[in-house]
Amino acid sequence: MMNMPATAQDQLQLNNHVVDSFQDCDICPVMVKITAKDFYMGNDFGKKAEKPRHLVKFNDNFSLAQKETSFDQYNACVIDRGCNELPWDRDWGMASRPVIYVNYQDAVDYAAWLAKITGKNYRLPNEIEWEFAAWGSVNSKKSPTGYKIANCHGCIDDWAHMSFTVGKYPANPYGLYDMLGNVMEWTSSCWQKNYHKDTKIDCKKRVRRGGSWYFNQWVSTPTYRYGGRMDRKNYDIGFRVALSID
Image (cartoon, one colour):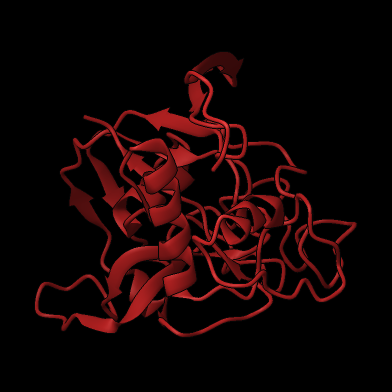
């Protein structure tokens, strides 16, 4: 069982935005508190799955992991028998690189393990929370093609065919790292092929977000979405956790 220190509060100033963060245990992720507000979700200039752009009434505050779940963090869950075996790292190195080759259930198991050791309701974010956080408080009609610096194909000069250490590049205005690029992230939301009200929901698939090191800047946007089979594992798929705020 992990050592459980008192919850640490850490406030810092980032791009004129106060980042309120905390960490529930030594190996737990640093979580960033995010205040919800209504926003426009989707992108009429993007792929069919991103349409139509629509107003979301959003008032459920939440916290989101500041960084993608790392191999070290996931390994703590494996050691404590909350998660299955440690996935392959493709010989890229583990430590602070985002864990890869994890399917939806692996991500859910890790969140459940955090919930068990902390007594808090850790879970995967839904795609509304994820997109709201990815915008970083700047919500525009036309989705940006990506941050100025993100680990995606063609986005950076030092791009390589692999993931990078989490948090290598600057955070977005909410203080969140690698929301775009690095690894694509599982969400808890069932897949719908678009946002039209009559679109069928397919819970055999879950929404993945954020693009990855493998994809270009047109995939690494706040609005791009993809429906992946829940058993799917790959070298550019990872996750980060969320936490409801009462």
